[in-house]
Amino acid sequence: MQLHNLKDSSQQVSFVEAVKTGLGRNQGVFFPESLTPLTDVDALLDMDFVTRSSKILSHLIGDELPADTVAHMVKNAFNFPVKLVEVAENTYCLELFHGPTLAFKDFGARFMAECLAQFNQGDKVTILTATSGDTGAAVAHAFYNKPNIDVVILYPKGKISLAQQKLFTTLGGNIHCYAVEGSFDDCQELVKNAFLDEEVKSTLGLNSANSINISRLVAQVCYYFEAIAQLPKAKRATAHISVPSGNFGNVCAAMIGAVIGLPVGKLSATTNQNDTVPRFMLDKNWTPNATLESLSNAMDVSKPNNWPRVQSMLDNNWFSYDNFYSTSVNEQDTQTVMKNIQQTGYVAEPHTAIAYQGLVENRAPGAAGIFLATAHPAKFKDSVEGILNIELAMPKPLADALAKPCLANDINADYDALRTEILKKLS
Image (cartoon, rainbow, N blue to C red; front, side, top):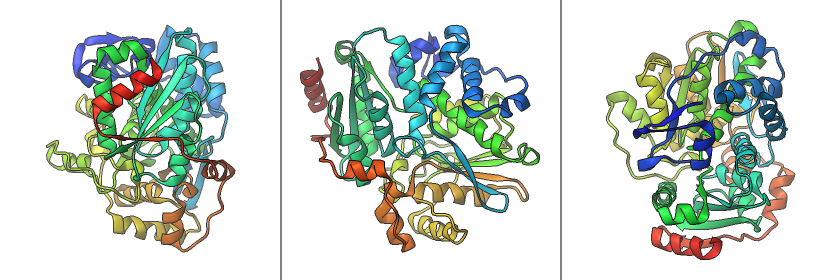
């Protein structure tokens, strides 16, 4: 798999190099120079999830890894179900929260951990990542107690749910957490600055587990094929998939799937009030505003790192602008949509509700629609119970984490302070 840096095309790397490097020169993300369509997609859709995913990932990665190695990695990483639930006629919810941290990030984080276990060969690695909610827990659990690997997680203090926070700030050991005084974009900026710091990079063996890492991105392609596989065959070709979008890695994976042969008609990347991309789609001007806090906090991103990958596919006509939609849903409408979904007998947290609304607004008449549930409703217990006037049962992983003390340290959104702290602790 040959990839190039979208900000510096002279930097070209293999899949293994891209996974180990994380972020390219000038803070550019790596992306394939081309994507080859799969052959016999119908036969793939008849396979079980793990077998199919192994073949998809082998196809994307190419000959850098033996097929049996990829199959072993996938079997270890994807050891929990993906469920497609029909919530209304012709309308389906893809539940991606049945992994160990109850969020879709489990897929990418666990596959990345398998990749680094294969590639690393005992060298010291420090995973530095920012989280707006679910990435932190998925990465922490995927790498917890892995030999020769430390994990540093930055999150915006007071701006993610307590359940999200406790899933990763209570582990300790090789998991080091910092509550940053600022927004998720501030956290991302700290991560980017660290990757520009050659001393920090070389001393700590720095890598990132955000969705900018190509291993996480390709892993997420797999569950879109599973979603289509669970649809009746007659509904597949025109299906519309709506993805709740913050950093835009998830919808990027869906688009990669479509480019290599996923039989899907249209894609929606639906945002909350942080609407940089929806506004860009209207006038092609990139004008990020200050990040606003919302009920759907994992999507509180104004400068999505994965948008250059999506835009590259659109601009190169790998996927048509005509079949790509991006609209925003405000706070009041998010609550209204949650109540509307409740009328079907299904309970959705805010991110899921936003995906549902994107589907409602943009789906063609008669087409099957799939909206993504990226996290278990109990991860947003307070807001879901308050808005829907219900009481949610607490899943055991969340109940156990909430009972433990938070081990995170507070830090200002200041790179020099972070640099001093992590060099002192980890070098």
